Amino acid sequence: MTELVTIRDASMTTGVSAKMIRHYESIGLISAPARTENRYRHYSKRDIHELGFIRKARDLGFPIEDIRHLLALWRDRSRSSAEVKAIALRHIAALDEKAANLQAMSQTLKHLASHCHGDNRPDCPIIDALDRLG
Amino acid sequence: MTELVTIRDASMTTGVSAKMIRHYESIGLISAPARTENRYRHYSKRDIHELGFIRKARDLGFPIEDIRHLLALWRDRSRSSAEVKAIALRHIAALDEKAANLQAMSQTLKHLASHCHGDNRPDCPIIDALDRLG
DNA sequence: ATATGAGGTTCCCATTATAGGAAGGTCAAG
DNA sequence: CTTGACCTTCCTATAATGGGAACCTCATAT
Image (cartoon, rainbow over all chains, first blue to last red; front, side, top):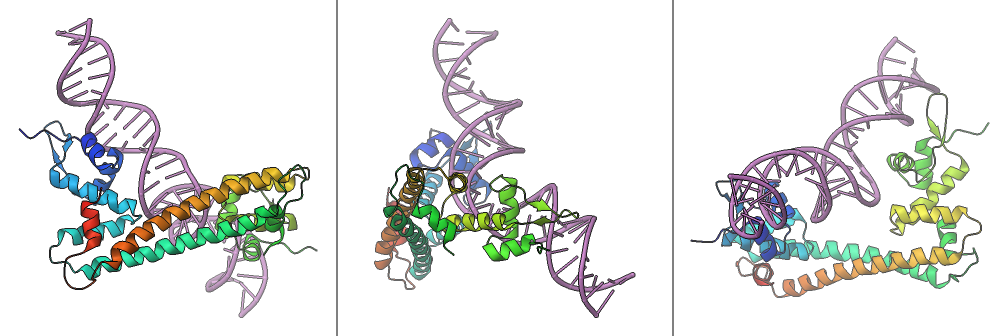
């Protein structure tokens, strides 16, 4: 017969940890899979496919609620690509904003660090900046 | 006499929320301030200065444990700037790595989005990528 | 037969930094 | 003496993930 795909199998083929698979089920991101008599979960090809979709979306940094939306659009044959694109563009903006923030911090620190001797003396523009700057 | 600086005053002058000031105290990042008879906290100039230091470090994205370390170095007149610089350089590397990750995601998505019509048709390279890509 | 090990199950706790809110005490002003 | 604006502590939540306990199930090795 069809070999039973356990949660570990699903995890290994999709790259989503078993812990996370159960979690996604508990928050309703994926529907509860079939169970064997002993209550073990087993996953259909469809389930596996869905988990793969989720992992790829996670790899692109989409938050869970976006993924929930993307999954609904994925299932909906009559979706409009505009809706998908809108989600992606919003996410791109969020990513860019975060990246810009991090870079600004990094740049400030790089500037300060470049003026720090980094020797045994206590004088340090980095500490000074934390001390003084508004 | 010296006017009592309440937690709200401290919050307003340092930009650290009262909630966070109490939290920093509870995790031992700052020491417990003096209390009036009615158990209200009040803050010395030194306390305020320390909270300002913490806020600036947070603005630069330093995690709490780094700040703990930086505060200790700040107080230590015989610190070596090398130690400060080392913390900063490690943090810069962490910031840069995170920024690079976000940018990679953004770039991938921008590429996909640029090929997405964004109209009423269902065809969508973004969904396709989540569907197919490994 | 049974012991062992590898897997499954549920449930609870921890992380990081921050915020919201409840329940109650205190204080100044009207 | 009430009202409102503070203060106090304690609990809960966030987003995504991992760790671990306590317990069940199953296949294999003795």
